[in-house]
Image (tube, rainbow, N blue to C red; front, side, top):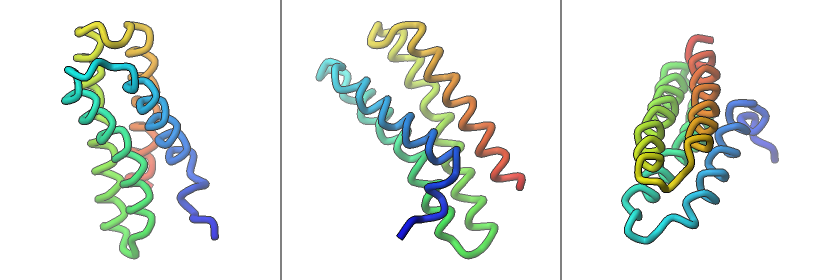
Length: 114
């Protein structure tokens, strides 16, 4: 059985981002666990809240989960910035991740306003 949210472009982008971040943080040093754990959870939360929102019957519930998802995307930004400042990721990679997050946030805003 296919789930309808799996066809949403924003969900596909959120899954791709979570995978990319998961792969990226594998090489972070153990002393940076607090960053890796938080970034991994925030990135995964984007996709999981899209899925959970689509499982809700009432529009207000769906919108709430899309807002939570958008908040998780925003949560990733300062962690990425800190990773960049600590030299864990390159400037170009941080910019690319922030660009992906910006696109996801715009798509989530569209879902919220729809």
